[in-house]
Length: 188
Ligand SMILES: [Zn+2]
Image (cartoon, rainbow, N blue to C red; front, side, top):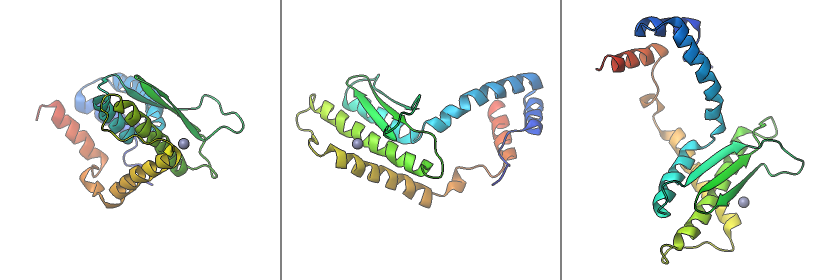
């Protein structure tokens, strides 16, 4: 566990002086950023969901189709860990239990969400068939096929993290991030 990339007071000082912006303005923006930040964690598998949006906007010829993913507002007894609704022509909404603990892990949560995304894939594909009769429609076996889709998607994700050279993406340390943005700021 490293704190190298965690924003703290001295880093805010450095940013303020590097960009010649008042410390107070940097602090204000950071406080506001912290209100936004939890939304990042709520968007489990955002990459796959964004891919779905792009794919089905074309397939359905509908630029406003979107995938919404948010935790349950409250959890009643016997409720599924994740569920979803397909609103034809507009959106796919996934709700999930985000109270991860020892018995319900984030790893499982991601798999449940991948299963729901599998349902979206099948439902939206069926919908797209109305526009092109040659397409496959997966009727009758959508429950297992949604899980099978989840296996494909999570295998690809795990393969990515297991094999991709993350050092190509990550900065070596926090200073390198600061220097990079100073360079962008200076138009280099
Ligand atoms: Zn299901």
